[in-house]
Image (spheres, rainbow, N blue to C red):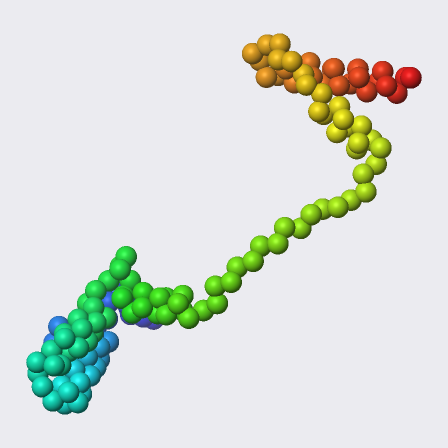
Length: 142
């Protein structure tokens, strides 16, 4: 038995001429709101700027894409950002643990300046370990 697999499911159907259902609703809503503003203000001269802004916004909702995503998603993200809490608090937690005598001695020996004798980092590391070990063993022998 063969089944027909749907293809191009990302593409919305064009229902109203070249417009999809969402685009038609955005444009019709903008036109309806523009008509309401025209009727409330009573003059085309007074209502020209608000009508222009509303139609520009509805056209951008219908056709404009930001990073290949619909403009409505950008508007939604902007509303969430502006109306959500933005209090970020960072509290540094200090690790306080009892220091033993060995830790104090290790810190004391770590602060000893070791002169640089060669360009090789491996040789420097082995030399510094040998010096610290000899200092530690000399102190324990006393």
